Length: 268
Length: 72
Image (cartoon, rainbow over all chains, first blue to last red; front, top):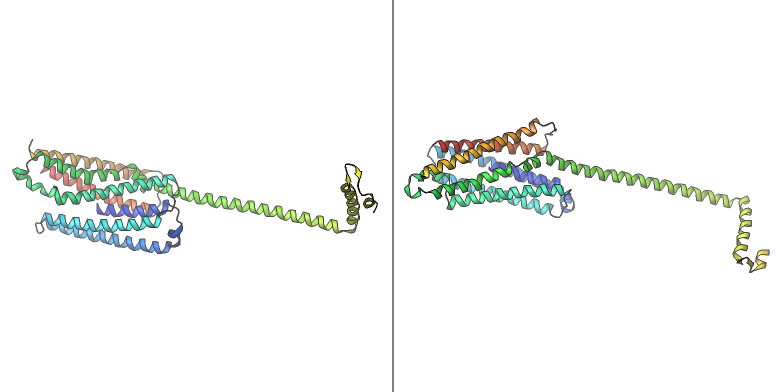
C-alpha cells in the first residue's frame, strides 16, 4: 500500500506538470525544479525500498514470535508516518511551484482534481489506520476473542469499519475507471490535447507569419507604384503635361461655382 | 450469534470483496493489454505498470489473508 501511495504522488507531480502551462517561476527555474524532483523521487523510492525490506523482516520475525505483534504495528505506523510527511511535503512544494499556472483545458483540471481527491482519501485512510491501531481494534487483537469480555458484536463491527475505511474504500477508488483513464489512455489524451494546442499555436504563428509576408509584399508593390509615379512625374514630357493640368486645376480651384474669381491668375 | 461467528462472517465478506477486487483488477489490467490502442513505454505507462503490479501483489496478499482468517 505504501508503494502505491508513493507512486500516486509521483503520478500527481507528473500530471501537474503536464496538465498545466509551464510559465512564470516554474518555467524560469525549470532545471532547478527538475533536479529537485529527481532528488525527491530517488529519496522517496529508496525510502520505500528500505521500508519494504524492514517490513518483510519484521513480519517474518513476528511470525516466528521473535517480535511482538504490537511492536510490528508501531514500526509500521512510524514508517508510514514518516513517508506521509515526506510525500505531502514534496506535494506541497510542487503545488507552490505550479500555483497560478493555468490548466491546458477544463478536462485536465477535472482529472487532476479527481486524482487529488483520491490522494486525500488515501491520506485519510492512513490517518484512520493510525488512530485505530492506537485507540481502536485491529487484526492483531484477534487472539483476544477468546476472552469473554471481548466476545461481543461491536468488536466485529469495529473491525469491519476499520477494514472498510482503511482498505476497501481506498482500494475501490483506485480501481475506478477514471483512475485507469488518468494513468493510461485519458492521461495520454491530455498530453495529446496539449500537443494539439501547441500545434494549433504553431499553425496560427505560421499563418500570421504568412499574412505578414503578404502584407510586406503589398507594401513593396505600393512602394514600387509610388516610385514609378514619381519617376513619371519627374520626366520632362510628363512635367509639361502636369503643368498644363495644374493650370486647369488652379483655374478650377480659383473659380467659385463656375465664376472666375481671380482672372489674372488664370491668364498668367 | 457468537463473536466467532460474527468475525467469521466479517472475514468471509471481506474475503469476498477482495475476490471481487481481484476480478475487477483482471479486467482493468486486460483492457490495455488487449486493446488496439498503442501504449508507448513512456513515463506515465511505466508508473501505471508499477502501480498496477503493486496493486496485484497487495490484492492477492490481502485476499489470501482474509480467506485464511475465515478458514481459521
